[in-house]
Image 1 (cartoon, rainbow, N blue to C red):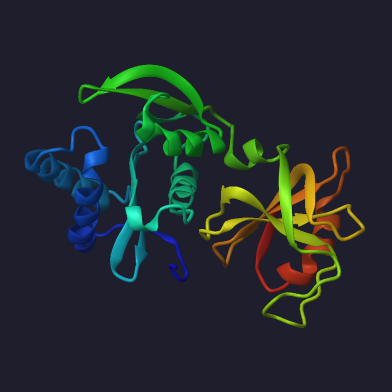
Image 2: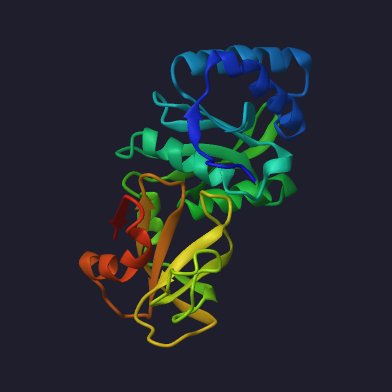
Length: 266
């Protein structure tokens, strides 16, 4: 597990670690099959580093996730994670950071593998989770790919809010935190199976509007709680048709969010 996982700009001093990761995953990226192509890619990475357009996640000094993006073309150029560190939320963390740095008044584009390509299963699911829509079929380095587009003003939060989800409750109303024994849960709290959060764990959820302990709940996401001083974020789920104001949400989640600098987005 990576402690204090965060996204940072890659520096030229990181290039050796960056390229070690590139070599690990080169088999999965058309156009990176030869030593010459990898050497050419290294030159590109160094340019992106100098322009502060190269993002990475580290475990200690080792780079385990990378992303390159272009402000001029408003697109994501490259996204890769060390195979040993997959399914920990690193791709979501990198992609969210890139989207935040690109121009949301314009369409953001990415390219990935086509629908029937086994390599495309995970990235296509990721992009759709972030609100990207399927675009034109293309070829890159002679390989069949497809563009995905995140249309202008279609922010990640706006895509998530309004979605109906199933929550598995592991800390029901009336229970206490498994480690911090003095933290009482005045509401049902759980997670969404298969949806990875930025901290690498399954997405945590506050359930509002349910006044009894439950073990499963189906409801609608009405808000996202971003922690400015922590990598985690929480989703707020309520019964269909129920409405809460930001102040009402803030009051109900205060028992835990009081320890963080949190922002509620609706």
